[in-house]
Length: 454
Ligand code: GLN
View 1 (cartoon, rainbow, N blue to C red):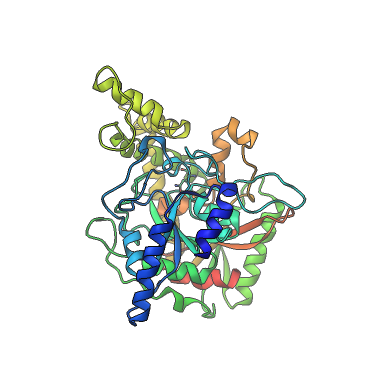
View 2: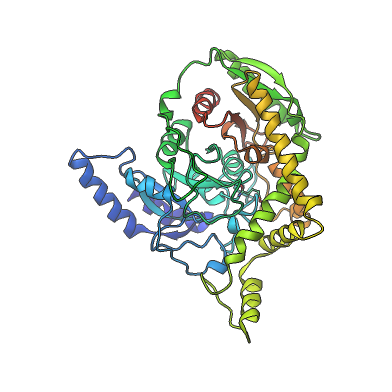
């Protein structure tokens, strides 16, 4: 009840929810109360959550914040959300995001930008919440839900978490089922939670994760009780500090934050080692080949026949063209063009194949470091705090926007788990985050170390 009221009061200003489902929430809460009364309670009984619009929710609008999915209501439920409901969680509505999860500022949504609930000291200017899970991060930060689902293909959980002072974890590729989630780049996409603190993130991920026969890339490996990792001393843990993440032009305050994080982990008993991940500098360009390539293939299904929007034409090809021209936004079209270009005959070897080789080298860099005994890697989460809505530099040059993902995309390329945790404020009083990267399926160590930082 209190959350439904809070959404009514604040959502016009923040634009975090695209669709609210108050009747559904009350119905689910009632069922939850009944289970609690009968002593038959799940782990998340009555916890009200916001759901990123990328997750298919049965009978409830699922539009990936795109015009082309206008009015689409799936007849299925994504495995991740089904897991949450099975544990007793309650759905408050669908959260805004960048269109098809393509973006780092939540400005590519057909439903308009989300506003970051934070403001810089002495300024009234609206800031972005980051993207693509900007609605999830803003809703958690503004207390318009107790926690939210999100997805991360190249940073979309971690970067918005860093921009809003919340905790976001992208688990290992294969930890959560991708079934029923609108696909962006299938070899990179993973679901995960955005939460108020490390403990909530641990509890939510435990519920979201599962092996699933409907997603053959989900992995059959026990999901540990992540919460029990919290509060354990760090003695015996080795934390790597990669020199390649000290990028040119990195603001002084990010460097200071990083040093502070190192000091905290040391105080908690961890040992710190300098490491090298030599192929880091190729990660961003390789990501912006692999992700659009897969996206151009995944988005081929939006043809005006099967889902959402249809713009009539004089024949079927004309209908396809009109539907896609009208239905997709500018950034999505840019990705489809890049993707079809790098996959086309004659360019495939030069771009796509090359990017896949780079991806392998990035993966090997991490394997070498973990093989040498490093348990987790500490880096900044983003190269800056939240920037302004309609930033002129970013609007003029999409590559500037892409540079925001410089610390996050390597993790997706290597399929590793990564967590963003709030670590301090910049000079303007805006939240900054640090990132911890872990071994495959070792999210527990990330919760353990992140808890020391938050
Ligand atoms: N900002 C990145 C992109 O636009 C990552 C998006 C994501 O993780 N979904 O591709």
